[in-house]
Image 1 (cartoon, protein in one colour):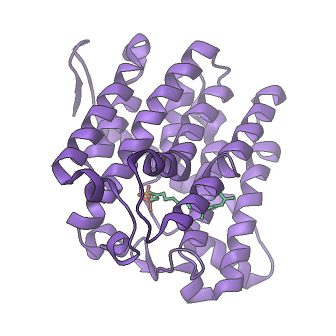
Image 2: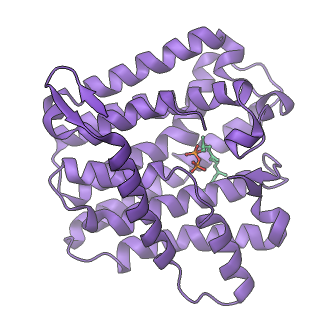
Length: 302
Ligand code: GRG
């Protein structure tokens, strides 16, 4: 049970998370058609339906509802965001990038289907994401969908994930300062999380004031999320994480724990989550899910 101190509003977060995750899983299952050839279809399904916390689609649906929309309206966009996330994981795991062989508790996509099909399955998921928004969304005015397509392009490309990934790869094995590390995290991880709440709110026709608050919220949780990821990489096990633990050390990556220590990293993540939640003060009454999701980011164990 999640309890909002200032307003005395209680909210059953576990139940919310369980129900919303099930709602998303059903839509993900239905999102892939009879792709041909069969090997491509299998490879796309293998990674998209491999589980995962589904945090990004849930953030999108929660932001849509906060902005006064119905979660059904944002569902295709929520699926699109999980498709972009999944393709980024497939590509990130490739030998030319992080070269990992474990993801979501199973062999990485390229280990099963080979590098070429893994790259192409990622490409197909990325392009399918835009199809979900443009062609498979109903009951949302097209001017809002155009804004969503624009946002997805920005957060995925050079100004977002791709840019962050390139800087991350360039920095491997080098001394990196806190400013550069923050740049990497905000682009590689934060951009997509920001896209989730922004797109959800845009679908509901949110105005600038809410969009601005959500942007501050997303920046806080985005950075906190990645700091927690860095912490878990050194404190948890591959079994619990479902991906290779200790990977940052092996790849000689600069992380928050390496730069400022574990205790200070934990404090920084907690402070960032508090700042993120504060940004939603004006909407506190309706922001239960987003406030609880922010706390979940620092308390998670995987
Ligand atoms: C999007 C066009 C385009 C290209 C991708 C490879 C790449 C460019 C970017 C890498 C981005 C990346 C892998 C960032 C790491 C983000 C991160 C911390 C992922 C783990 O997220 P969780 O914990 O995973 O939410 P689950 O499995 O629960 O979904």
